[in-house]
Length: 147
Image 1 (cartoon, rainbow, N blue to C red):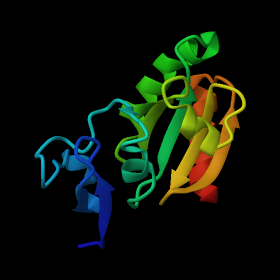
Image 2: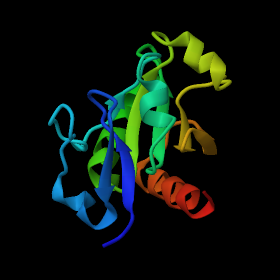
Image 3: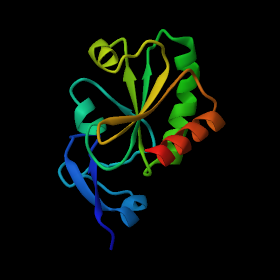
Image 4: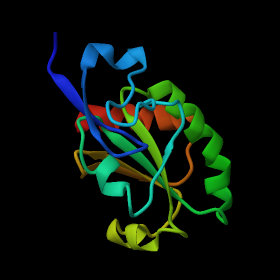
């Protein structure tokens, strides 16, 4: 049996220990009993950002976006589809920069959409601009290889 991975619950923020080989078995949170992975991006706010993107052993890919941004809206379906593909290897999350300007400022977001890959709260890769599915796959694979 492998060393368990620390996985933050996207619902209650509890840190769950899950053996790596059991990630594909749709694990639930030990505290709130909800699914740790649901096949869609997690909505991040100032209240849950550090609990989800700042800790845990899985990388977290955050899409910094805004509802008025045409390229962001066009990229959204690609990002949602990617969540089903990449989970549970990594967590995908979205952060509305309009609703969370303090977090956008904290990470120096100057253009949207911007993707940032975090590992244990540390930025390991960044990409600005909307991507198609193949470009997103390439970005994710490259970021995981580097980080």
